[in-house]
Every structure is written in C-alpha cells, then in structure tokens.
Length: 393
Image 1 (cartoon, one colour):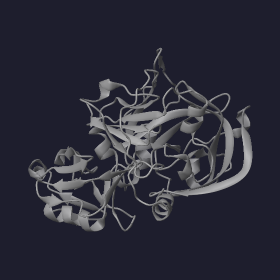
Image 2 (cartoon, helix red, strand yellow):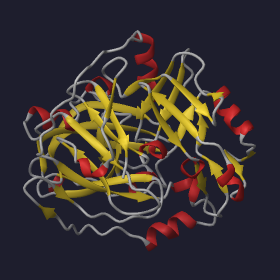
Image 3 (cartoon, one colour):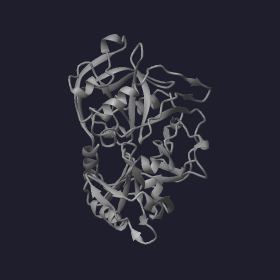
Image 4 (cartoon, one colour):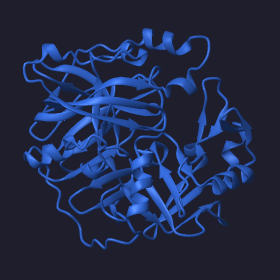
C-alpha cells in the first residue's frame, strides 16, 4: 500500500543486496489460471454500463479442476481487460471467492456478513456461521489502496488456493469498504512480505511455506496478452514453458519489498527516463506504469498526447510510429513497443498507460504494473530476495 511504502522508504536506507547464483527450483508446482477482467469504473463508465455488464456476465461458482502430480489448474473466464483474478475458497464447507492477487500488499481479505457498506452487498460475502472451522478475533485493521480503502477484523479459517491448503489461516473480513462498489472481484490476496501486512497477520504465502505445502519459497506470474486466456500464477517453482531464454535475476533493494534498482531507461534512443537513483516496484496491483510526474509528463510531451479527463490520448493510427520505451535493469534491456503501452478505452480511443505516481519520494520511483508483466515472465523469489525476469512466450 502507499502508506506502508512511504514508511518503508523513510525507515530503510537504500542499498544493494548482492545475491549471486541460481536457485534450483523444484518441479512440485501449483499453477492457478487467472482471468482478465474489465478495469471497472474507468472503462465501463456512464449509462449504467458496468452494472449491465456484470449482470450479463454473472460468475458461476461451479469449478472444474484439472489435477496432475505436479500442478492443479482452474479454468477462469476472460472478460477482456487488464485485471487478473484467481478463485480461492475459505471455510468448511468451502465458500468460493474471486480475489485480486496483489504483490503490493500482504493481507488477504474478503467481504463479511458484518459489512453494511454498499460495496459489500454487490460482492460475495463470507458467511461465517456456515463454516465449522471459523474463528474470530478482536483485532481490527484498515488498509488504504490506490483505488479505495477498507476496515476489517481478523479471523481464522481454512483457505484453499487450488490444491494448496492453509489451515487456521488468518485473514481479514471487511466491515467497511469505500471505493470498491464497481469492482468485479470480491477481495484481495496480498503476496508481499510479512512486514508490509497492515493487519499484522501472517500472509498466506508464508503460512503455506511454513507448513511445507510449497517446496520452494517462490511464486511466478504469466499474464496472457491480447485478451486471451491462459494467465497463470505458479507457487513453489517455475515452469520454463512460459518464457524464452534464461531468467535474469535482480536483487531486491533492500529485502522486504518487491523493489529493484533500474540502471537507466530510454524513450526511443536518446531521451532518458532515469536521471538519478531510480527504483522499480514490481506490482501486480496496477495495470499501468506509474512514474515521477516530471518524467511522465516528458513522455507525454514527446509522443504528443492530448490530455482529457484523467487520460492522455494519441491517434490510434499514429501508434505504429511511436517510439519504444526501454528499461535497463541489471544491465539487461527490457523494451516495450507502443503496442504494449497504448491502450484503447471502451469507445475505441487510444491512450497511454503512463501515469504520474502518487508517491513523491526523494528518489525517482516507478511502479511497473501488468502492462510490463505481460511482456516479461516474472518470478518472485522470497528465498533469495530477488526477482527473475525473462521474455514471456
């Protein structure tokens, strides 16, 4: 979350963790397919379009599992946009929820029966009286995200992600929600480090790791392109069929958050996107790329965008002529063509994915969201405090 990141930046000095060598990943991997959905309010705004869309695409709670010795996968529908969701179950018997996997936060929460906010009534709520393994605590917490905020209470119950089972898992039950009225997912599952947790509860990834449910402390994302199915999150290892070449490893700076150092960045061949000490936050919690206002404004000026509302538009015809953006991380170039960083809204108008970051640290700070992760298969290695990147297939 923004609050935890700002605190982290103030409290921790910036220094490299030099991590060398490769980790030998086990082949005991759990893969959970994800689904892409509309980016809610901004994409389907006006004329009650969002409500009609969600009614026409009501999610059915039936589940088809494909089980094998090394993986479990759940087919999930694609609603043609840039948010990636997975389904989990909570309780005994299991109650199913669609959750947003977020590497920017650490808490798992879903709406509760206690919640009276309008947002909660539009999503699946956890029926605590129907679970024989439910246990409530008196601990409360709150989280502020970029798009909304929630207040909740910590509870314990059995949580399942595919074949992964975490018993007596602490999780949040929202009692108040603000800003989540028009989102097509029920809750959020955080995949950041424990110290980022707002509730103080052990994150589900750490609980699974401590229970020995996953053989290696890693997870990875493959995000499908061009509105196709096939997005996957992997726990416990890496499937090399989802990327090309070798994984390039980058140490976290410092450990305890999914932040790495960017050596430089270029718009085209000359314009610099990093003029000091630059950091990247690898963040599945946003579909865009966010950066310092001065540099984002420079990008928009050079590609001649037209600001309107909260977006910067370009001619769709001109997209083929726009320059590539190249981020240089640990000496490796990671280019993005205009086709990757230009989106279309629901009216077919083209706009850029670059946004000014709400964070204002003294260093140059970028947030790399799904637009980058779709191009580059990303491994989050908790065991070695590093991130692996390779070109996605």
